Image 1 (cartoon, rainbow, N blue to C red):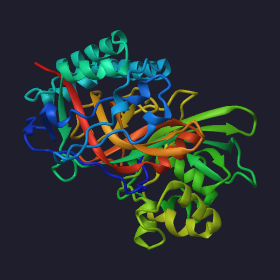
Image 2 (image 1 turned 45 degrees about the vertical axis):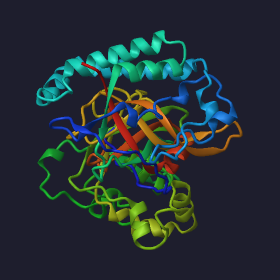
Image 3 (image 1 turned 180 degrees about the vertical axis):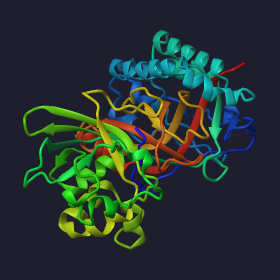
Length: 416
């Protein structure tokens, strides 16, 4: 989606030993001995109806001999959650489609001297899909994966595997196909002459005004695609890079990334922390929304600090698409720095991920989850950043707004 995920912090983290690594030549990934990952790998989202007891914090990382292993009841066998298994299979199939394209062949040519050849990544996905279809439970899948796959851990942002995780989503908002007194804040198409614009490009204030209402005075006048009633909603569509819009005429419009100006992304969440409005630990998307709802004039102060301006195109109902040109799948697609990481590959993440409990509340727990590398983002740089796509709509947005913490990222390859 080529979005720029807001950085919001929950202050959560996990730890794992990193001794005994071997470097994967040319990539910020290191082969991890299996005994260092023995207590991770069970993807509980794939389990059918896990009990509440099994929904408590899932993993305790072995950092010293006195640290206990996984709780006893965590080894109980569960059948498949067919919906989540189907979702994971779809994400795998999307990766396999990408790996068959000329774009993938060109990208992977630079990895020819590494363990991550195009053929090995593809064979790994095919075998994982086969195991997903033929094993009897997530527990059996975990056992088979650990027997057949090698784990390559990202060196992270500290050379010890620490990775910062955030979440993104496809928002759903009300909008109007024409400007009205209620719907005043536009999303714009990319101008036809954009490639001839002089650089540096105009700033955000120059394009839309300090208040976002430049209208006919803007050089973008005439390129309006749709109008939203709330300025922050319009800005968040730019942050996420896609949206599903319920129009006032009763129809639905989907929009996706259409281009961007040549400025670095600036997180307004980080700006609020820098100004002392929130601490990093207490900031979340719900708190950010409440802050601006209580004092809308602050939008004129903070939104202009992000000069990166995103253009959109109508996508005619298509699902959000990642930078690889394939759809992103909720809970199963991630964005990484594609200048560093092998695209389309299979990963296991261990991260603090929010989920909806049976009570309807959203709780964050450290979990293992199999994911596919489908996307990138303006704010996703380096070996220590991962953005997880969490789906479409309000609940996905609630989860994304709460997801920020430290975890670990493993790329999985079939053993030679």
